[in-house]
Length: 196
Image (tube, rainbow, N blue to C red):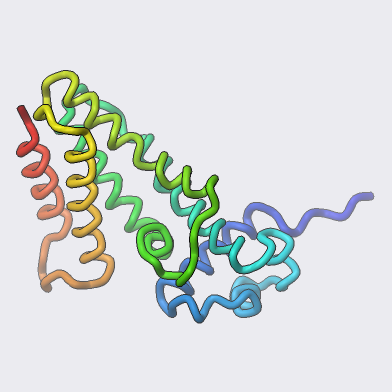
């Protein structure tokens, strides 16, 4: 009879989530494979079996973050109004960051010095933002948005959501600040500004 597989997807995800938590709360130096294994209630053999070494673990963490993020972005239904779709994507961006704050730093900062994602993970990161670029291109081609290079609108939109979400995740907003309401108002004002 074959032995049951103990290094399964559930363990892989548990290790990735714990690795992300270690990185986001304690920094890159806290991410040791031995500590990770102990925290997740498994062995270092399991970590090596699932990921290889630490660089492969960090790459898998980066890829998992963008996998979850990309799925949320692709799940946003189109309304036919490019400005509204831009706002909805911004809301999904925030929802994703709040759902997985422990993955946000590996995705969008240099939280692990010297880390460079492998080409496959790098492509996953770029493709996660494809819904944003698609909405902007469609909005320009249908006359909803100003006739500017799509990157201008896409990058400025990304900058606004990234900046606001980063302030929120890092606790840098004023007390009693209604983040959700102000966030959506900022997205709507930004989208409105690009209307033709």
